[in-house]
Image (tube, rainbow, N blue to C red):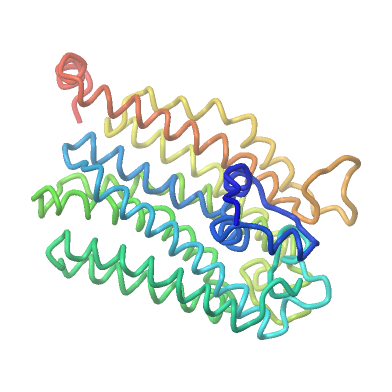
Length: 354
């Protein structure tokens, strides 16, 4: 079987639509996994880990080996969650009848590319790889009880996100916590412990620094659940928009986008970040676009040449997240470099002390 590196790159950047089983069967194992787990979305995990890694580098805790192992295992864990998500919804009958999920990307179970047994096999294999990375992190940190707690928490969320958390309108909040303060502070803490620092003084600020990206990721999820709330309501899936109503959910999502930038400003004001982090405001045009779109209900039909239907609010939120996330990483790279390079570090210690 030929390895399709071009498909790897494409699957990491965009959601793939495919209807021909023969085309699917011809793909290599990695391509199938990347497409089935919707890796264009799960790359947000890599972003969160890079944020944590840059903050750890700034504070002298960074190590390439542990960082790469933890990042890869968390990325695989996110994909494993999506495999379980699809299996659960398919088994409960949610994904039938041209459901929202089946319209924007490959769904191997619905399309008959895999059987339920095969889906479970992929889930187990993927889960084992993620667990091995988690065991490495536990060993690397000397089985620190806080890391054990994070490991258990992550496993529980993976198993129970699709049901019951998503049905209890808690899925969106869980996504904000996990891909924001918890994952970013958690990866930072793993690197700090491995470097021998058992009480990192900046851990609280690291968690705060994780909030903007967590809100940006959650805004995609809330947007998606608004997009499909009628389908969810009909199938008894009690997401946040279903429970509180579309208008309030749109207002909450607007607040999330605004708060993304407000937290950055706060961290600059308290000198945790240098003003160079305000580079994220180059994404403000996209943020205003999201806020403006959220002022009105989702259209019944896609506008002419709209490429991402049936996504609407989530499409705009994803468009913002891509640029905001990239600028956030660039800003953190420059900010951290200023704190690490001796000349600029001395200058900042004098004129912009933390």
